Structures are given as structure tokens and as C-alpha cells.
Amino acid sequence: MKSRQPNASGVGPRRSRRSLERLSTRSVLSFAAVVVAFGQLPAAAPGQCVRSEDVGNARPLKLFYSLERGDNFTAASEDGERSALASGYQFVRVEGYVLSAAAPGSVPLKLFYSDARRDNFTTATSEGERAALASGYRFVRVEGYVYPSPQPGTVPLKLFWGARRNDNFSSATPEGERDALASRYAEVRIEGYVLKPSSSVQAGCGLGVRWDETESGWTGTWTRRGESDTFDAHWTHPGAQPTTALLRVGIAGSTVNVERTQAGGTCTYGGTLGGDGVTVTGTYTCSWAPGRYDFRAAIRCGGDPRPAAGGNACDLECDRQCKAQGRAGGRFSGGVCLLGLPSGGTCACN
Image (tube, rainbow, N blue to C red; front, top):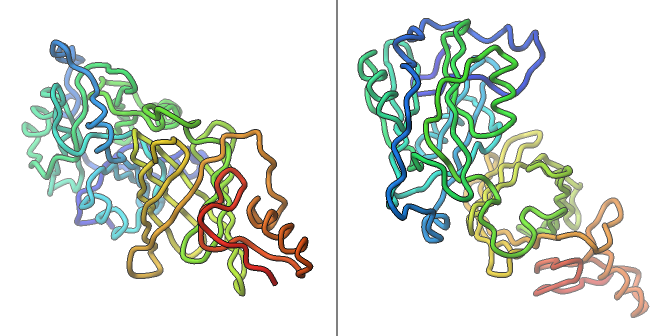
């Protein structure tokens, strides 16, 4: 059953052949109607560039996926994300970052929707808009703003078409492109250029190798998988069972976005990267609890000892300090674990 909310069609995360074959074939636009001939993007305006103030106001272009429907939802607006989650879609990844407000030389990334087909089409080109309107689609909203030509720190937002499924999908990540090609989608054109995660960090070490994080009395350790944007997270709390989750982390300028998935629900973190390039502060919400809560984190760039299983470096340091005072042990509480050392918190001894 299709959602009544606009939902983006395309290919989802790479699945097994059996899962891919379960994708529903919908009566959508014909290839000739949806995807017009390849065209040249508008030339860059003189002096056009990505300004630091624009990067600081970027917001993530997120891909959500419904296994039940075999359908995707790509959204950068709060309304789009609410529609995806309300319809049972799961977060897949951040495809890139779009500008939240128009900047010199940028163009709107528009969402069009067909009530008859319950399908949408997101485009930033005049070709795409003409095809959408000619096929009976109505304008829904502007999801954000992108650049029509390459700029420093940007990547192309590519449109792919799957004739077998009558489906279109826009992606700005290597993973998305691999999924599209593996599912026999054809590349059509570049819709525009979006900011890539971590492309504009001026200090620090980008996503680092590990994050030491605190939230609502919990102490977290987020460990990065190689050079990807995926982190394995582990939290501890006095008197509570440890918990784990899978994170997808992105940074664009000073904007930090984290999507958390675990048994029982999801959380969304939004934060700001400090001027040192390693300190993050912000708030988060979770599907299982009302309200918005604070979190703080420090990005570890490597070169410092990794924590033992079951605790982070600051827990171990506090435990050492407490034992040196003749106490049974201790743990870090109430601050930020900065590069393995307690900062702004206390060591609670047993």
C-alpha cells in the first residue's frame, strides 16, 4: 500500500537479488516522458563560489527506504523527513548536503508529485521540471538549493532511470550509483551539485577515527568503520544495561548530522562543529521518547590509546585516578571526553 505522502522512487540500498526482485513495479511515467534528452547544465555565473556562510546553513539530503514497498524517499526538508518516517521508511544514508536558503548562483531543488501515480520526481533542471509538468505532476515544495555547475567541495547529484521498474533515482554517493547500475539503471543526467559530507571542515580531522560522546547521563564511544561514514556506537550508564547502535555521520562546514539506528527505534542528532574542528555540541531526538536532549562529543583524530571493551578512554582514566586515591574505581560523568582526557566533567569514584 502506497503512502499518501509524496515519496521518492528509485533504487534502495544494495539488497540481495531476491530482495531486489521484490521491488514493486508501478505504472509511472514512460521513459521518454520522465527523462528528456541529455542537456548541458547552465554555465557558472562569474565569480560563483561556495561561500562559508552558505555551507554553515547546509542541511542533509537524506535517503529513506521502505523494504515493504521497495521504494525510496529522498528528502532534505523537515516535512519530507516526517512523511518518510510516518510511512514506515528507514533511513539509509545522507546523499549529500543542500543549501537551506538560496545563495548566489544556486538553483532550487524542487519536488513534484503525481496524485494519480503516487510518485514523485525531484529535479533542479529546467528539463526535469518540464517533463514533470507535462506528465501531470504538481509542484510540492523546494527541498533546498544546489549549484548548477561544479564548485569546490561539491559532488554531482546524478539522475538514474530504471526502465524495468519505471523508476527514477537521484544519488550523489558512490554507494547510490553502484546500487543503480547493479539494478540496471541508466544514468540520465546531472541534476546539480551538492555539498559532500566532511568536504568543508577547515580544522581537525574530518570524521576522525572515534568520537567520545555524552548524552543524558550516558557515556558513548562511536568507532568509525575505516574511511566510511558508518560508526559502531556503544553507550554505558550507571545502573543500566549498555546499549549499542549503528550510526551514519556527516559533516558539512559547521553542520553535523547523525542518524542512529538500533533495535527499538531511531534517533536524529543535529549539532555544530566548533572552531577547533573536533568539538561538537547539539541536540537529538529519539523515536521512543518525547522531547529534545543535549549531547556533546569530541572527535578523536587517532594517535591516542583506544579504550578497552565496555568503556571509553575517560572512564579508564577516571578509574585509574580513583584507584590511586584508594577507592574501588570510578567513571567519567557530566562532561566531554576530549582526546581521551576528562573535560568539563567529574570523575565519580566508587
